[in-house]
Length: 103
Image 1 (tube, rainbow, N blue to C red):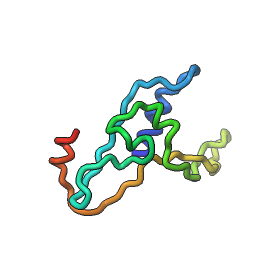
Image 2: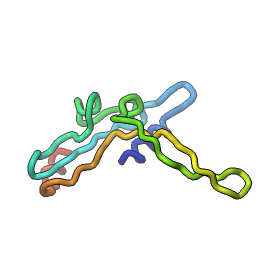
Image 3: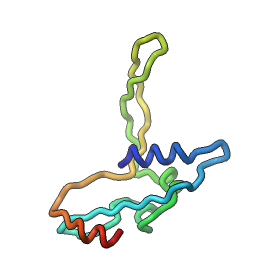
């Protein structure tokens, strides 16, 4: 999910700023808490948010290792900052019908 959000943001960034080509909503569910928006902060206030809100409201930035070509046929490992908006949780049952009705 986080990579998908990041990819959507990259597709919307232009020289003059980010364009709101997408609106994104996330529906979480389980039998203990029911149907919820699993995002946090500003993104939790509405079911559906424009992509520019995702760009400026990540939950956190993680440092991750990425392997990239060095230009001479080799590969080097570098550290990148990766935004995280969503931490998946697997608890309880899966009332998918209720989630689909909410959607």
